[in-house]
Length: 387
Image 1 (tube, rainbow, N blue to C red):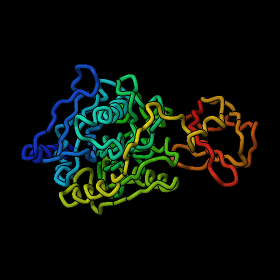
Image 2 (image 1 turned 90 degrees about the horizontal axis):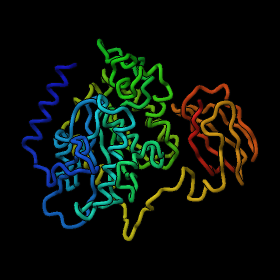
Image 3 (image 1 turned 60 degrees about the vertical axis):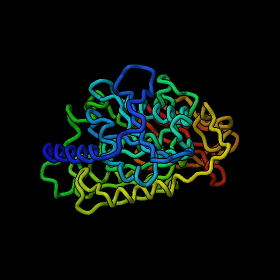
Image 4 (image 1 turned 90 degrees about the vertical axis):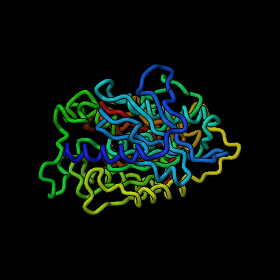
């Protein structure tokens, strides 16, 4: 596998060597001197008006890789007239999760804050990631308004980290459901539940011994029906990240009504099926979905608290959060509650009324999504931490 990865990197670097140089190089998106906080911007020739843009997040097990690989994947996007941004982020050997997500979210906010400088259409920004970068791209798309994951301390807080499209190439999602889902064709699959795995290094603990942190890093844990369109690609012969990781992401997005395109590549291994024709299809996808009309559109500087509808958080409350043994329900209109675990499994659905108390003592520690319904209409959603 190491030789395969090395050959892949060499191929990507060759593509980069013959591609267009960045229009803007080594742009600091955080006011510090870290190389990890630099990005490159590739602007199509002759651009005179604000343009749709795609932020590319590189792979490398959260511990290697850099923005220099961007054009190895995104040349076809640039040729299709899309502004491409390659971003560095802090590696796991230097800083544990969620620093990596803080970085890429800060990069999105920076691009919006400085959109005039780079001719970026702030309501047509997509994100694309491969492998570990696919994980971060998916998280960026599902965890909007989760304060612990925003990285507001890094700057550019006058803008939102919201994106309008996500393309996820073979990214991991739920780390504890990887090792048991490899296809039979994998003779030497990558084992993730061990002390020296990429996921364990990312979280600072063996994943089976810190399930609360696994939930914290799980894109599925935050899906609430407000996500942008997703396109997901995975090879069915992947022996590093099993295809099941993308399937469970697809299923939960569809369950919540999110526009989702899913492609399984027959015989595709980890990162070995991204050819020119496929990337041209990805460029066409971004052109299709990044087509929002935002004339005179202004996004609020501080997004509202999690909820369904702008004022939902004013009318409902679920407490205490985190919960140990119970949660109390308060709200104007409710007649049913539904609780999902981080895998999307419904663990509770029952009739309720304002003032009811739900027993959580038997739930496994971790993140859950609670949704309140009234007359079959979802009125409120909130994440709940059980500890």
